[in-house]
Length: 348
Image 1 (tube, rainbow, N blue to C red):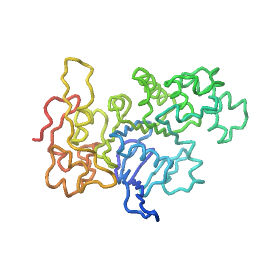
Image 2: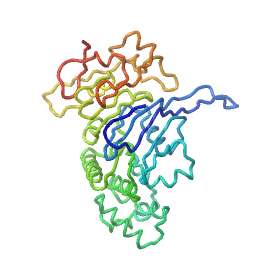
Image 3: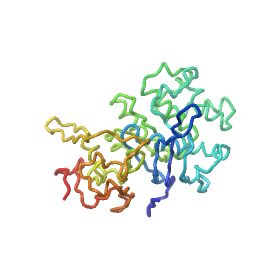
Image 4: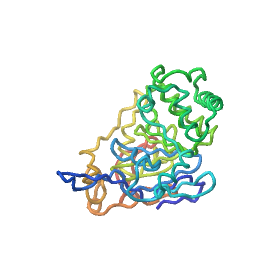
């Protein structure tokens, strides 16, 4: 369990697991499990942005969906501080008990076109959450939709149009408007800019930052692009094969990583200067299957700093400096390179 001495925690995730059964044969007998999320713990303070990063298939989106109970977790706690100052475990609630909390937790999906109904106008799309939650007066609903569209930079007269009439960036603004319709406190953004052009990405990220300030939002920002995470996040949690291997304030992660996997990810971030030589250090081997992870540290088959202990003992997620958590047996002795630190990726 991870705790923090500073700040009001809006969300606390403790020992979260999500295993998908592997079934074979005519009788569909369970022969194993895919450990999509394997004992994950973190927290999100009220008003901050936590970036959840890692390679495709590491469990980021599954973690996000478990938090919102879009899928049911196998075990663990998902503790949420509600608007009326209650602390509830979302993982233990029934469907009927979760429904009132939907107003306080919303999601922005990765593909804006796939997440919008092509047969619904903007008025129907953004107004549907209002209708479901009791705003039955058509005039009031229309006025609120117009207000929300204005917040995300869309003209109110667009509300009679359909999603196909908009560009990718405008469609993502529609998705953001729908997520904000009920004035949530926690917004889970699942790769919200990965399907957009780079120039449009910057506009949407700046919009999210502006909305966070105006509406006092808290973000769990799921992404694989570290440049995007660096721009928007207050803290970063790095996932690898269903586990969090490092979590720290953004500046500390980028300047002084303490886990070899984090350092490898940072080495792949391109630098916008043609005079700077690439210092990318490709990792050997393949990402292990979450259905059959290696013993000990899951990263040890690819780690350039592996020792015998790594192959047998799973490293715990420890706080090695204030607010900097690392799951590595050698975290205290390795000197790794970040984006703002010179040197070489060697241990001392």
